[in-house]
Length: 98
Image (cartoon, rainbow, N blue to C red; front, top):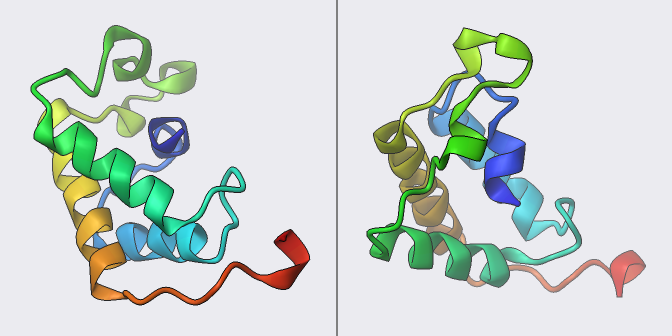
């Protein structure tokens, strides 16, 4: 789910890591909360498995500016994970989503 979102973002910098963490904390992404995504990020980064598999490595619509390397993606996921941990404890799930 995270990789799907990332394939449309050109800049994998701190600002986008913060914005993605915001979306996770506020349950605005795929209906899951921050712990779900932090667990997924930590699991992916602890694994030797390739994150940018062939299915994800090819940029959408042939837009080369959206191509991200394995190391770029791992670095970005680490920033998102750091941002999520930094903001703990997280606010409760918004009522409108319970």
